[in-house]
Amino acid sequence: MSAQIGEKGRGRLGTLVCWAALAANTAGCAARNDTATPGFLPGWDEARQALVSALSAWRDAPSPLPASFDTRSVQFVDKRRRPNQRLLAFQILGQADIENARQFTVRLNLEGEESPQLVKYNILGRDPVWVFRLEDYEMFSHWEHDMDEPAPGPGEKPKTAGQPAKAD
Image 1 (cartoon, helix red, strand yellow):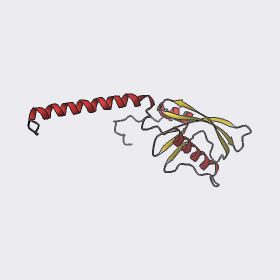
Image 2: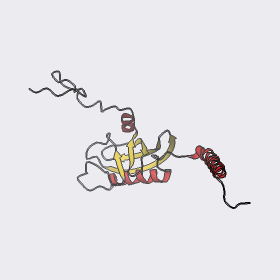
Image 3: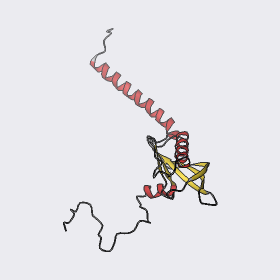
Image 4: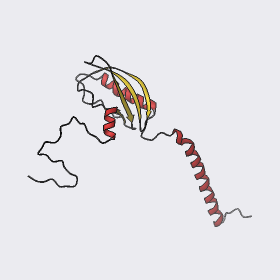
């Protein structure tokens, strides 16, 4: 017998290797699909750490309060927060599994308010991790805008994409 594999043998061997690799990958994927986490979703510990980081930055911020509590690794979106309103304390009460985000319920004790607020925050993303107040997340995910913003005046026309601006 010859130690060399002929042209026909190499083709069959290559086909066999491809089928074996495909079968191994398919079996491995089927076993992992039940517990797979999308790449844009942080793990629970990472999500909690981002939430604690954002809320601690708000609570511990110097006076006057900065406009944003963003860091390089955590972006914080809470449009319901009043400007210059201090966070006195917070407590994470629970977490919920929702589609496309990690959700936490938090009790916020805010300066100037007698009773605490219960707020839900959705956390998603990786490098940076985004911490959205639920209301802001819903507006963002539905491409909505803040309804408190004034509508264009009667003489103003909305700009349409693709049309050149008219010169006055």
